[in-house]
Image (cartoon, rainbow, N blue to C red; front, side, top):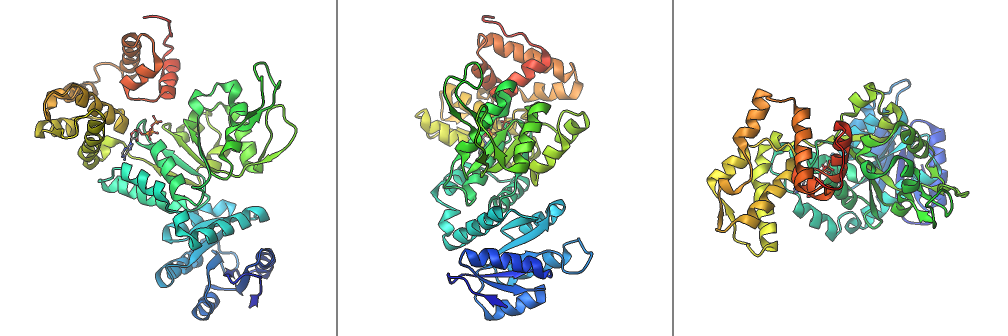
Length: 457
Ligand SMILES: Nc1ncnc2c1ncn2[C@@H]1O[C@H](COP(=O)(O)OP(=O)(O)OP(=O)(O)O)[C@@H](O)[C@H]1O
């Protein structure tokens, strides 16, 4: 059955419930689309044979009392195989979002949660129609710029990239997990660039660096005079992100009280600036990252389970660098080339011994640490080849510490932090750089170990 809109774009709605089909038909006709209806995947297949359909929006369960999504998944796989250019959106209940994730792995572009807000529903449809009509929207120059900066040789990191590209097109909240320096921020940016939101801002909030009492103001903004120090109106990050992506880095550092505030906004999609009276709509997509084990943090009652489920529609774990040894030398070459050019030494190479040393090291600071090691080596190298001695690493002793557990790891960590602070005369930026971790990660550890910050060391 077809109902006419004013445009020539055809959307096929597949659902066994007539009221759902009617609601969508009404909504999309109003926006100018022609809507075709099918009550089953079989019916839909016959329509697709005869009509030039632009988009399929399909339910995942077609038999009474089934919730497995099996029929829907088979239908998505069929569409991907026989009509690979067709844009497919799936509809799922909030509790079965995992089915939507499987559907996206099979080729669906995005999902719509039932029950939906009409504005959200239309926004998702419109974004995917725009991407289908103008693929450049999804893959502008920036995408290739960032992807050329991402080194991926190992199977495990390539799998991460595959998943990242698949989820980028959807509106799903993504949680990136992995140790410090594994590339979570880089991939968050990449998700944004590969998404249909890439013409809108990508805004980062490093939650580890936001003082507890300024959390609301940082995220939602404040009005002049709202609190001592609020000398003028300030726009929050959520509103700065607009319809783009908001990247919440160091998520686990958020206090329970602020987690509750964040959750409330995510549930209602509405927020007010501190001291403000008007309600604003949250239109951005959320990408978050943490190096903590949130399941453990939930058990320890440090993290809200309901917030975790709001943020981790799709969770992607980035393996530590030592678990993907194939990436180590290509990454080292990448940085050697890049940093070599910056320092006027473009011809530098790595000796075989240097490569062995890089491969033997454990990389607790992951790719960030590797980058710093190469930078140091470039600065100090006097010859065209970087030898193992030029790398300020001691693979043997680093293994020794892990093998013998000479000191509890926490003690070693504390001692290293104090040493870095002493050497940098208390400068947090320099210390973080020396330790190969972010500023906020350093602050967190300083707090954990109770290290006293002094003006001079
Ligand atoms: N696969 C990669 N290819 C090239 N560079 C990478 C890759 N992964 C990470 N990097 C680089 O390593 C550095 C650290 O990465 P990034 O800041 O994204 O890590 P992170 O996991 O967000 O760290 P943290 O948890 O400390 O915030 C950055 O300079 C980033 O560009």
